[in-house]
Image (cartoon, rainbow, N blue to C red; front, side, top):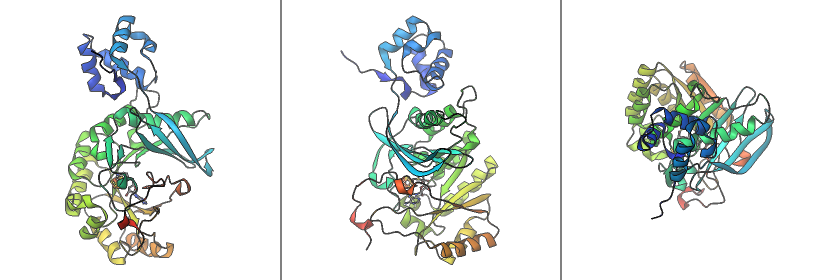
Length: 362
Ligand SMILES: C[S@@+](CC[C@H](N)C(=O)[O-])C[C@H]1O[C@@H](n2cnc3c(N)ncnc32)[C@H](O)[C@@H]1O
Ligand code: SF4
């Protein structure tokens, strides 16, 4: 009977322990294999020279090594660090594709990683939400998005990835265990890439049990919560998931998170004209921020073809900011990079695809 070989990269480090145990090998072999796959990034079992010919043969009879690859690049003409904001279409282990974005700045090179093919949460302002959900990415597929971009950057001496944000396609906390595994691989101190966990940010729509799980997990990454409204009714109409993961519940979870980790949370707020931008909305945001350490990151709405939302005028945004700052909050404004190539937040699924009728400008 013909059985298809499994991609060994689809296994977590723990699964690799089972793989070697089944072959009657000692546990340390799992770490050796993991190192060959993710530190040396080898493409065949023959290269795993410290395993012995017999074991290498047995592995290649059962498994294959399949990696992700970049199948399309789009570069923003505005350059920093020799490269502009760049969007990469990355082919996964099974031919599905996701988008990965490089955002170079004066002092850093940030890679925006996708965690799912599509997203099931259907936030009303996000193009990815309209793709529907296909599947979660495994840990290797997330780590490899970073390696692929890093390999391009390191072609230029002294240039490398310095920050990673899980802000690409998908909701990372619907794929928590794989995301944590990817973070552990990217930050493994024995590997040459070895990115400190504090340079990695997980962005979530605000899933309450998963925020608790992240706090308890002991990982040292940063947490960003996409808030976008501090009024329950408004938030639920923008983000359907907020009906179940309510603002009150989220506030309590963030208090617990900060208590346990000692780290502030970034609240991401996208100003949408006539929707969440009134002075009353600013005051609700101030009230939401009491009781736990946080920073506000105001972001611009990146327009999605045919969607009914509009970004606010700069003067209006400044009035909003004055209320927040006046209340003693720490506010930053994120400049949107990459809009000319549809690489900015929420634009990652944007193709020539038509959106449903309720998203058309009325
Ligand atoms: C695409 S999401 C992925 C991470 C996670 N699912 C989340 O929602 O936080 C990353 C960020 O993009 C924001 N976003 C989505 N659509 C946007 C749009 N049209 N303009 C600006 N930001 C958008 C989200 O609210 C979130 O803060
Ligand atoms: S904003 Fe995040 S959670 Fe919402 S649909 Fe987009 S990817 Fe999913």
